[in-house]
Length: 224
Image 1 (cartoon, rainbow, N blue to C red):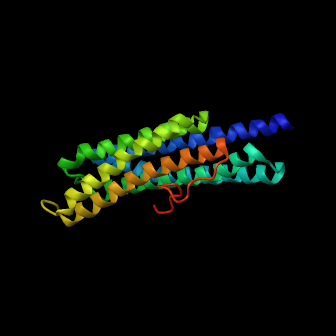
Image 2: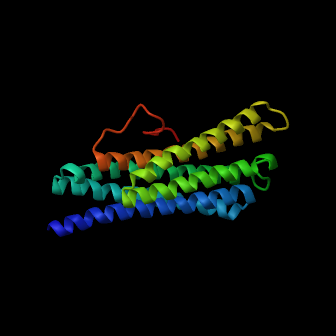
């Protein structure tokens, strides 16, 4: 029985990592659809989002069943509690990827991102992808040094959001639609980074037992 229980816990971690991989694919495809004006790819990202939602429901059901059946304590209890929060963050990240794809779809056949901002948006996407990959590794390996790096790297995403916001805030050379779309897009990518930070902080709670800093930056992300 004990071996089966430990196997269930390991599978739970594997499920979280797999869910992160699904979100990673969605993010990569959504950005490609956005910058290349690929309508078919955007549609695939939107259509795939319910599968990420289903994965969250399945993972949460497993966690709740283990909580009820095994009455875990200490690290095992923290793992199950953390998994419920991490699956929620990953589901929201999937939603954000779908939002990016919806901007691409709405703008078609035009490109939503003006030429002068394409490199910045690509960089925001690359940073969010790196944060997600690193967060998945942190979940798998419980690597707190890498977790700290994810938090540190999130600063560049925030700076890029602020940089683009300042530029479009001047309102010169943009249509109203471009201003709205860019404002949304930089918010989506910035929130993706915040969710990655939330993931690694949950792992910190799992490993150390220290309470998560709910007053700190981007710990419990409830919008978008």
